[in-house]
Amino acid sequence: MEPIRAARADELTELQSIEVDSGAPFRDIGMTDVADSPPMPHDVLAGHQAAGRCWVAVDGDDQPIAFVVVEPVDGCAHVAQISVAPAYARRGVGRRLLDHVAGWAGGRGLPALTLTTFRSVPWNGPYYVRCGFRELSAAELAPGLVDTLAAEAAMGLDMTDRVAMLRRV
Image 1 (cartoon, rainbow, N blue to C red):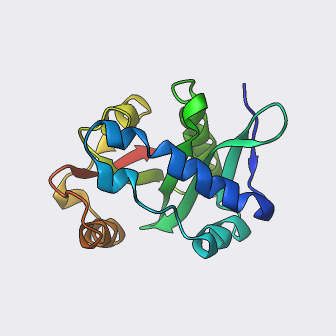
Image 2: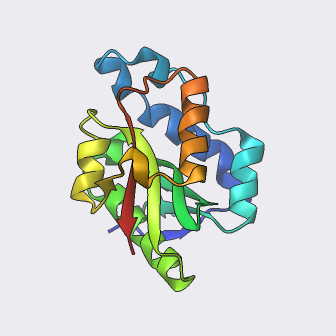
């Protein structure tokens, strides 16, 4: 089982590479715009890392194989990015990162994890349901999630398939 620890500042470029590599499967389902999306900007990633909201799962040589970035949105821990290197996909690494974040959030009195994702992509919406998330209705969306979805629309994402989800901690 791969250990999880706080990301280090000298690993951020490697995390960007993991994010790019983890997007490749979107190409196989015709979502080339998503597959070709740039990773989280280095300065944004650095801000999350410095704030203690970026964790990595590492291999036996302490090299990152997956990461998660969280930001405060609507009083919850919002999963801004989670990426697993393709060689480690489908091994429970992402779920363990989510569980780690849930423990972190609970320890800080945050009631839930939130995220936005594609409803129909098997390793997105259906996967997060298996990890304990549920889809939020439009009436349940707090202002921060509304803003997040609006920003995603402005980036050109297909909003007919985007969904906000929540997992209680």
